[in-house]
Image (cartoon, rainbow, N blue to C red; front, top):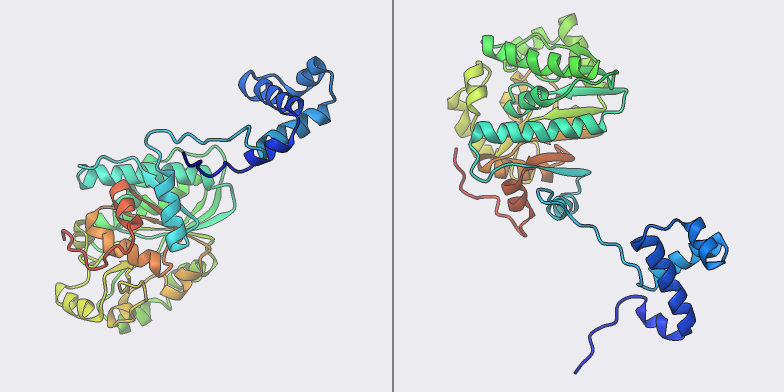
Length: 342
């Protein structure tokens, strides 16, 4: 029979006397299996406490003690780590969602996961930028618990939210709601997100109230954004802020697959300057990409290509998504031309 490769460290056991191996094993079992504390081990075995500490470390080095992390059900650490390594992300959080969840159920799951992430990582002093018209971000705000003390200084609306009443209400609920929950000051952008012409945008950006908000976008420490597919979501379409469908062929011809804050990018994540850019009232692409922590909350098959492109382009460096999207992203050479449901 051919022996397999020896475990790391175990080959060194052969050079030790049997009484040394016995003592190493005894100390390791007392500490790790029986919960005996180091001072008690020292007293019981009549050796010094520093020696007990050295023996425990030696037992690990020799492979007598091995540490195993048992991953609980519902936690997908290996998939998260693979995506982090593949796309160079700071963190990936996979929401606990059902494979057959509909759009509303998926948004609730994403929102719950994002809420826990924010509650855990907001420690104080953050200047948070948020995008408008995102069901996932609204679900995040609705899932969060208020903090007993302030964990952020400002919550800045990075993209105009005026349109119809629904759009105004949604933008206010996301910006104002997150500010209330974190003890921050809300900073609203009281204007449409998409204007009729670039000339109109040039006039509006010089208004003091608008200019001050756009300036505040340059000092953000964190962004919380949705990731849009090339086809406007029902929420965006109903808001009165969506681009005209006649403009869709031009975007497709330019290679657009998705957007963050109405800044469109191709399948490699490269920003696509288009005439639409000149009509958007909100944070520009360069400023957005300079924000240190950029958290994207998005999932579902409809957004697979857009999410992958956003990761490739560095539009987000923290991703909160569903398991099916995460598994798709973690496949080697995941195709960028996958047919998706609009």
